[in-house]
Length: 174
Image (tube, rainbow, N blue to C red):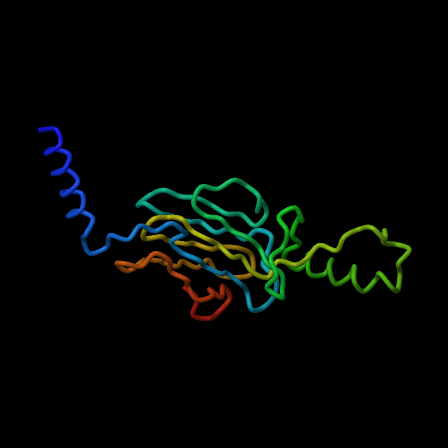
């Protein structure tokens, strides 16, 4: 009798798993890239991720190493190279001026700069892997661009959505 119940249970599980979307996804649900065309991202850039109806997680460029549960974001420089998490990113006009100034004054006024002082890269883009499970809303804000909202959704049978780059200072953003 016990064997019969086990066999019926296995058969029921097989039938249930053959639905329209029986795929088990093992990676992030969304990959997004956020950037400004007009220059580096400001230090106060915030990416608010809303998922599962009302759960919210926030990524702050001013604290890129804060722990997260679903929004795993990395920052990149102008060439698209990821910036090491141990490096404090330079952002906004001050970061761009500091990086350019450090490079320009190293030869002309090298006595003022310590030779071992690293030049901090400018943050030009944020790349995020979102492990949100389904419909996701992004709200991105910061100095120098209007707050924009993006809605992300997967289609049946789709495990990963690679969104096109979101240009935050585009006239039609949002």
